[in-house]
Length: 289
Ligand code: BG6
Image 1 (cartoon, helix red, strand yellow):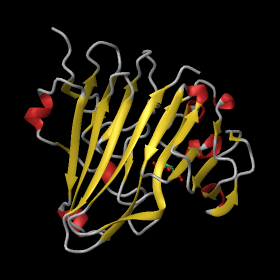
Image 2 (cartoon, rainbow, N blue to C red):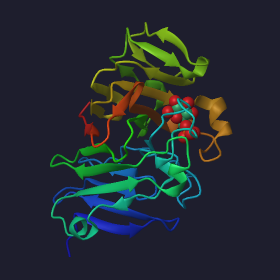
Image 3 (cartoon, rainbow, N blue to C red):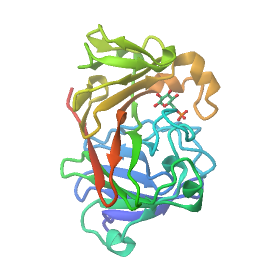
Image 4 (cartoon, rainbow, N blue to C red):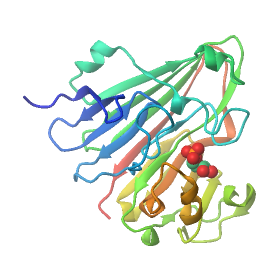
């Protein structure tokens, strides 16, 4: 029997994940309900585009290291919540599960709303967040995020799609297109700098929040282009050797295998009035180069 476009499976740590499969090609993606977290995207060429740490916790005891963690309603330490907010350690639900599982196209929407824990937190609002994942006709991956304010109060949030991309050779990895932009350098206590280099390279720890980053960003050596909408900022991160040793869920050589480029909304938070919805989108595109 041909594989279904949408199926629900169990991962090695016992957690459920949705698998989306392209009807004709090899493109597919795995999305864990824990964190609404993409752990794998195989593009049309058959290449795995995302880096998932081989020592990532896949049992729900910790945010998954690698893939695409969803940072919400706080990016990093930019607010009172725990690092990167609560969404990446929450269990999301499949929206309209019966319809999703019988879909004839590889797409699924995961949703989460407030819980007693989030209501008791420093971000106590009623909300509905939705992430719609789709494998497009060309095998590329689309992620749409929507956050509806179901409270009586205005709220704001920061957010990022914390994408880890597989690189064959970190020394050859370059991110052009950010030259001239101002960034907050998290590797230097958040000091603001202007990028004067033609491209970002990774000969040391890189942890930068670029303000007003272009909507298309390339990681050419990884055959990848990001196309983002309504995420005005972008984080570029590689922890490098010394910090890797402190990450218990990253192997000692794991820092050589990934570069994070994260569409983000941080400098100007999203502000959502009661009844309104904020929306953003990321398309990850495999390129020939
Ligand atoms: C990046 C931050 O987005 O996430 C880094 O800029 C941080 O400062 C990294 O180290 C990983 O965070 P965590 O919480 O997943 O270890």
